[in-house]
Amino acid sequence: MPPTTVMAFQQPLPQILVTGTTGPLGSAVALAVARAGFPLRGTSLSKERAAAWSAKYPEVAIEWVTIEDHEKAGTYDEAVRGCSAVVHVAGPFTRMHTKGDDIMIAQTRGTQSILDACAKETSVKRLVYTSSVAAVHDDPHLGTGQGKVYTEADWNPTSWEKGSASTGEHMLTTSYCAGKTLAEKLVWTFMEEQKPGFDTVVLCPATIYGKIPQAVTRLSDLDVANARLYAHLLHANETIPSDPHPSFTNVDDAADAYLKALTWPKLSNQRYLISSGSYSYARVFAILRKNFPKQAHRFPEIENEGLPVEPSLVTDASKAEREMGMRWTSLEETMVQTGGALFALEETDKS
Image (cartoon, rainbow, N blue to C red; front, side, top):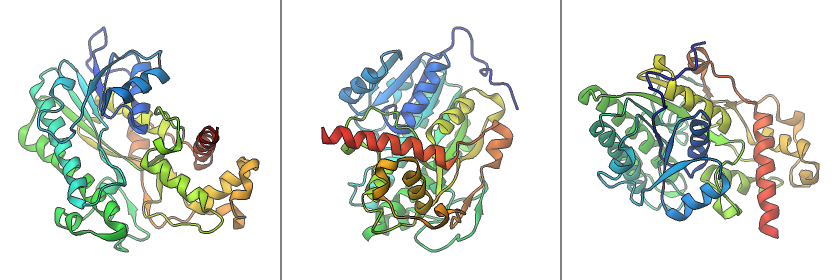
């Protein structure tokens, strides 16, 4: 396992930018960066979100930059200025989108903006870029890739045309997958053609679960993944849903991976799947029923507690294990963390 010392950074440690700081993944990464001793700069969609985050973590010294328009050319120039490395997590996505083009434009233009900003700023030596397993797996609603083991060599065979033409109940997923795929390809093309003064590490996490580190006080504040899980919990006795991307990443595992991607020289210009494992909703419900006795009535009895988990596809994260020394948090521990946070928010909503 390579040492966890920082790459060619001088003392005192230089400033690091983490975009999308107020989201679940961005929050975890920002906390890891700050706790490693780096001066931290973060971005937020609003001053109110930034203030709420800082109120939750008063011990963290952070310089805030408001990014109101993620898609605008030059929008990240101020945020990047003077930083030695950038961790790009921001990728605005909500379930309120009505057109696939809107989702893909946000992903690709935001990516182009951060690339351009980093290329202009000679102080930037590394960009850690957030892609997704959505850029690796086949489109989950096409019925392809069943039983496949996916590695970093795989790409979602999608296109702008597919994302743009998608409609109905699968529009959000199909367009999101297309946007993440095209945005990541934009990164690799930029690195190849522009040969900027920085290198990159691309991380492809799965659905983020575990603790909820962002500043939320109500269930309505939840991110897309946790809101979707909570909606399923409300109807657990009625239906056990399937999941088109049955891989998860514990938020603490993700933070560990990002800190290594930021500081380990040997990871230069590599792509990594960051997946803690596979899950099914049957197994999730069984875990929550067992570990939260007061909530047990909300869940059906699951045969053999949902074991074994037999996912429709497998995300092979062994490269991250070999080259980053990654070790993964179990699904049970992850769901105990998630369940505890969701049930606590539920009680807050009732009061």
